[in-house]
Amino acid sequence: MTFTTPIPHSDIDLFSDEALRDPYPAYRALRDQGAAVRLDALEAWALPRYESARRALGDWETFSASGVVLNETVAEMVVGTVLTTDPPAHTVLRSVLSERLGPRSVRRLAKEISQRADHLVDEVIDKGGFDAVADLATVFPFSVVFDMIGLPDEARPNILRWADATFTVMGPMNARAAEGMGSIAEMFQWLATLGPTDLKDGSMGRAVFDAADEGRIRPESCVPLLAAYAAAGVDTTITAIANAVHLFATHPDEWDRVCSDPGLIPSALNEVLRYDAPVQVFGRRATRDVEIGDGVTIEEGAQVLVLYGSGNRDERHYPDPDRFDVGRNPADHLSFGYGTHACAGQALAKMEAQSIIGALAKRIHRFHIGTPTRHLNNTVRGLESLPVTAVDLHPGPPQL
Image (cartoon, rainbow, N blue to C red; front, side, top):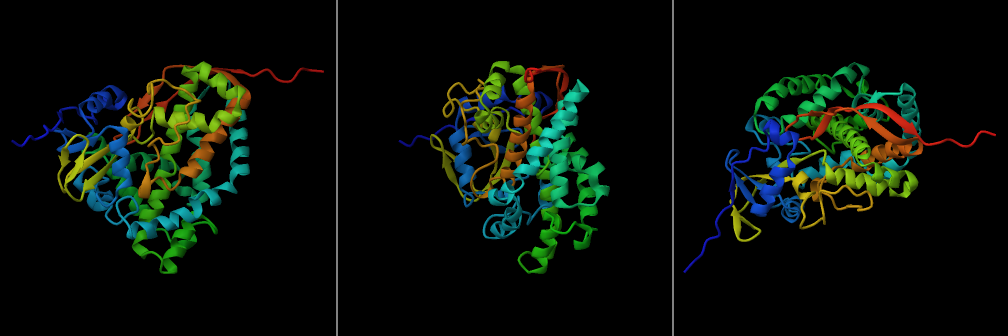
């Protein structure tokens, strides 16, 4: 007698307003059902557990990046981009990004970024009260990345809107994605008007055109690569910094640990990223029938959702995962992805966020916050605003 493993099904809509505001109860329910769960509303598979998510991210031959976008309209627009290609084409495109964003290249920026962080934190402290999203988390990575890309100043008022739209249109074609389509079209149309001389000498943007001139990439790859720089390099770092302030404000004992031991800052950032992943989900496409977990088979051609945010809270991998612990140091979190498509800009993002945390830890003993406002995006989980009503400063040196 042949026994067939029953397929776990769920009617959870991970992209509803309710789920986007607090996805973690839904994630737990999915993890309890299995390593792979069929989402009936999306006609797709979810991978909610750490091991199944990491396996998919590490196996591009079985789980293709061609399924990164969850709706056909946008999927057709981004064919051939660094996000949607697999090796060997992906390797070539990624090499252009990695030249400027790899750890060795970013390391030389450490002093400048640290100084910028100190200066910005001094400015917001002088205000007395400030918005941790608008005045801190947005200003810092925006100024760093915009200058590095070398875009013309006329783009500054639009970059944040374009970045937000880039991530939300990667979800299913719901109202949020439909609303973002106009911004995406606007971004690509504007980028298509740029030539090498429109970008600053020595910038990452100019390097993209140089790579095309050298024949390393096709000329039509320039605009998608510039879009990847402009969008991915800003929005997720903004979210990580804002989430850090929120978590440190609501977990003062953990903030005390960071302030008393700056050596904990890298671990603390890893815990921020694990606890509330900036990118919650990315899609993949199954290239063959593949068995996941306890005998459940995902069929060839199926849409797959890799749930970063759920894997990061998987109690099978992280003990007591709903506890925020800056000493945990979950360096293997999924928030930057894993494998071939791991975030190319993660070294810069870490440096920026760690610099801000370090600057705050040197000056601020306690954050007093108002009510945060959640920003709803199909892919990125972040805050619209986080009012910091006041801060208690560390006591300065004694006056002589």
